[in-house]
Amino acid sequence: MSDIQNIAVIGAGLMGHGIAQIFAVRGYLVRLMDLDQDLLAEALKKIRGNLTLMAEKGIGLQDDIDSALSRITTTRYMAEAAQGSQFVVEAVSENLQLKQKVFKELDSQSPPETILATNTSVISITEIASQSKSRSRIVGTHFWNPPYLIPLVEVIRGDETSNDTMDRTFTLLQAVGKHPVRVQKDVPGFVGNRLQHALWREAISIVEQGIADAATVDECVRFGFGLRLPQLGPMENIDMVGTDLTLAIHDYILKHLDRTPVPSPLLRKKVEQGDFGFKTGKGFQDWSPEEAEQSRKQLQEYLLSVMKTPSFNP
Image (cartoon, rainbow, N blue to C red; front, side, top):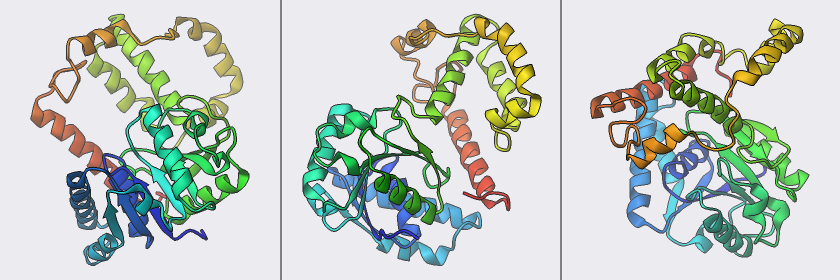
């Protein structure tokens, strides 16, 4: 059981409001901080909407929504958020200088025993902590979007993160029903995003080379090896088929895979043309507003259905 009861979340945007929701639902007192008062108000509306939808799907109770929201207080002041908090999660924009500034302020404004966590998805924990004095209490906690539906949280050790900080963070995340994993080296992208973007690089390369179009690439994942992934990870799969067979395959195929250290020229061209995907209706594929919304809805429905399965154990 965690010894932590009071939580602060810095940043009420895409990830911040979902992280605040996780702790409030589990009975923790949460201070949600953002400079934008309108964003704070919108965050509370989104949390209510999330909890209402989940209750409609049989996840949680409608009667518990008001009590969960009552445990969240909002503020525009970092010092007020940090005061008395035992665990702080930073969820501001992915900008190194901004994060360094936030942690320098948190370091001076929070009690010395408070754990300071960053939700960065790719930036070095060590670099984020570099402007702070108490670097041993700074740790990475990479939640995945949407954080209230996806169980994984990568707990990343910076160069100076203490064992106590790692252990207390791990225990807290288990207490709120997440599935934390320990990342013992502070490398760009940590574990999950290194795996994800290695796949994305190869997927873009296949389209760029004219091997298959974007829709076909997605079909190969959805109706092929992607069906196994929730149950069978790549390392277990290697052992299942045999390290000898894997070696034979790698001896042949690895030299044919994309290994360029820079973004694809095709991807860069898409961005330069303003083809931003769902946001503009065109990316690697064309998307009407209805199709984009349907894609988002299908993902949400899928994640909600997974949460209800008896085998789901975060």
